[in-house]
Image 1 (tube, rainbow, N blue to C red):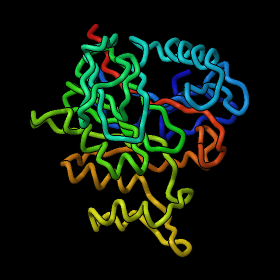
Image 2: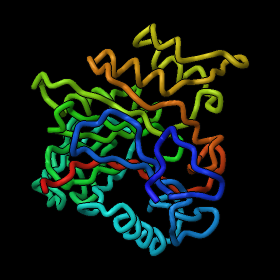
Image 3: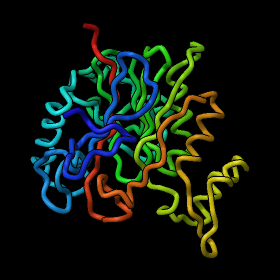
Image 4: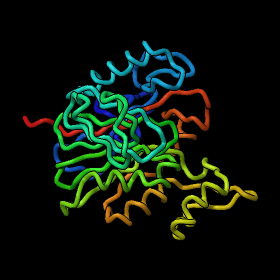
Length: 278
């Protein structure tokens, strides 16, 4: 049975555990999002396929889940996992196995502490068979590809990363080749579930007034925040106009892990890679 597409409903009882982004990706660029129902070894409250190693789950279970993910998606190589920090650093991977010398830090003066799992909130590559991975449970995962498929990126965009410029840092990694970029906005918390305080709104509106459209007042000092709209504004300002995805709400959709909904919970993965030549 093929993986579920982002805008396709499967009959009741039919689950693949994987969502395939519905976007106009160039030939050879593959992507997938894991659902918590994907077969895995994690027990409650992390059941079943938690892929995060820093949320309290049993390490052996997460390791088994990660190996199972590679088999389930027939990945060309193990995913390049990140130590996500809600910042703006981008790790560039030169190939599927990245020794320390093959990892470059963008947007920071410091190199990653661990070349196999660098501290970064976005990943970038021009290499075939290199699987980039972002872990989330309400934050917004964003996939970016050059229109000709020559380079790809995966971005972890919570409000701090968005405000700090993680999208800008990721787009900068593509360089000034003139090749258009396209983006897909993956499953993040929806605006009706995401109430924030004045400090979050100010972090965006004080820099760009048009960000006000992404906030709707609720009670004094609080706002509903639309991460998708904030991401679109940042992407369009960078000249990225081919934007797909959006419309998810991890907090109200039980297919996904949600920190705001559950507190102690797992993480799902959003993956992108370039298929090796036949």
